[in-house]
Image (cartoon, rainbow, N blue to C red; front, side, top):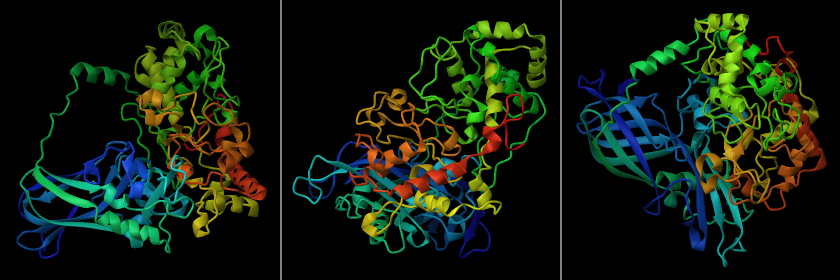
Length: 595
């Protein structure tokens, strides 16, 4: 971080501290959580907030004796649903200040820079913030989404109909600037508490069906975006500044550290190449990739001894030629009993923040263990499995190469499989080749891509399929957990089975659309057989469930009214996302598209 004083040539000789900015969300003066219960909107309307997220940058402190300190290159992310409502600014000079300013948004050069430059965990990494506009370029500076219901006498009759709203504020002219004149002393770690009243930001805005008031994506001529950015600037309040209280850090036990060291791979380091345009992933620090570990994981992936009765391997439900899916609506386990969910394809897993249709497993190794021990999947008894594997002298030798000793444990099996799965990359489709000039899309495919990345906004004369909200960017997914309107009440609780929250009922992970042409059937339960069925669902089959994602709930009840030709064009574009370097890789060979 670089200290820039407008009236001084050198940084202050005083001490430097961490300044923590905490944000409290409110609705018309009352604290509110997001997702929220019903809130009072304009003129008898009710609102439920489902998302608030924003990017903070450009922090400036005004010194009491004159001059300013600009915290250059410091960025922060606010995301209510994940509880990330604070940011820490480092190397702030001690002293007295009487002003604090910041902006929601980014300088143009940063906004339009390569999003792949930001390391894992950085606020501007698209995987972290979920605010990059994908192929359209640039970031959403602030996102507010939710559901609303009209009053009996208002413009959105009948009162019982609940719809969605989605406000994505961004583009260079709409950087939002927030400032306070308030005394602030920094003498060691300091916390500044601020309040953002979302009721003032959007609560006075009258919503009406299908007139453009339910959505904005900050187009140049969008008056609503301008109105909302001004309201957002005025919705902030300074609460207090006080010394930071830091809870004691947890200390790992020597035994735990020794156990982790014993499981750490010991082989030849294997580099991970991030494809051009992809965000930087966070590789597991306690399971670094090695040549020996990946090769071992690949072998185990095809080993039927990992299941009860030697009946199934991982590849039984994740076939390489199907992009590691299995072509069935739901898969049968070792006893022939079918599960309730579709086998997800296995590629680009390194970027995912959670695994399974409900995102309930935080690491690949956890998902591996769950599949092996699930009684209606591989039904493995881990003690039986490891005992049998340890009888294989050749396999013990490979474990020794990968882990430094020949002992085969369940944890080591998980780690080896995780290493292999981390290396499965899909990044070389016809679409990717077209971006670098090595292939050309047909006119129909171009039309499909244009529809894919265009918002459906008939009130403003914009025609599109709105796919990019959930499937934008190089990964063609934001890994969000959403209800996409398959049922009014989902038989499968989805994310709610993990969180026990009613607001998560029927929500499932957004799958990547890469290789979608070879991973049929579709949806969490495989109910849709073809890509044509999927397009038809989003065009006119969405059911208005209570947890329906706002980006779908804002569409008219009759749907998008895509023509038959437009639907064919979308399917044609989706077929350009097939990566044969992953889907056609034979068992026993290298299954990665990047060394």
